[in-house]
Every structure is written in structure tokens, then in C-alpha cells.
Image 1 (cartoon, rainbow, N blue to C red):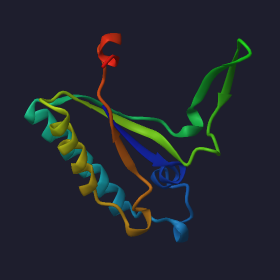
Image 2 (cartoon, rainbow, N blue to C red; image 1 turned 90 degrees about the vertical axis):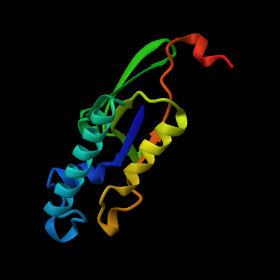
Image 3 (tube, helix red, strand yellow; image 1 turned 180 degrees about the vertical axis):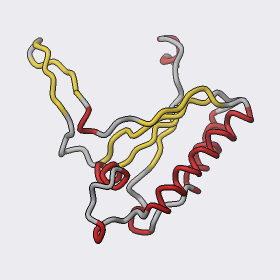
Image 4 (cartoon, rainbow, N blue to C red; image 1 turned 60 degrees about the vertical axis):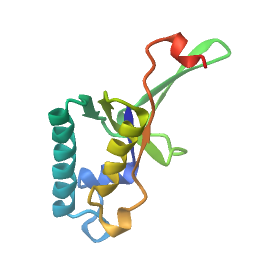
Length: 136
């Protein structure tokens, strides 16, 4: 699973919620990013390595569930202590972790305006089929 991260500001930029003089992304930048991601996914479909991909709603639409002293606690997002959030994911199926790494590294080619570089990144983690995959 390729987990794509971004910041709340990135979401605000995509939604047009950043004042024009403060925006890092232009409409052309957003279109170029969208076109890149469409090509990225289409290449995976064509190679037979694509399984699924989705973007996630803004952090404000998040609910965190945990337990405190055995009592369920629900907290609504966004979470100010979190600089980056999971923004989307792509699930691939390929021959090796090295191949998955090659695919994930291609995301570094995504066009990004100079001021926004470094705010987005991706993590790659294998999906396990069961507990036995966690051993060893």
C-alpha cells in the first residue's frame, strides 16, 4: 500500500480556501498534479499492478476513536498536533518490494510548485494477509 500524505494547507489550497495572494498552488499546478496522478494510476492499470486507489476527504471530516480507562472516546478532526495527514492511498500488487519501491519513487516526479515541495510524501508498506505474515 502506498500511503499518500499531505497537509491541511494542501487541502485548503485544493479547495480554494487560501487567499489568492497567499496561495502556493495555481489552477494550472493543481491540474498538472491531477493529470500526473491519472497517468500514474493508468500506467499501473496497464502494467497489471493496480488494485485500488482513492483520495480521502479533508481532515475536518475525520473522527478518531480510542479508549480512555475502558471508555470509548471519539474526537472530531482536524487535529492541530498533526502536521501531515493521510490524504489517499494506492494499493498495488507486484513481484517484489523493490518493484513496489520503484513505483512509489515515481511519485517524486509529480509536479509541485516550489513553495509546496516537501509538504507531501508517500510511505510504502506491505499489506499482510494474516498474523503469520507478522512473524519473522
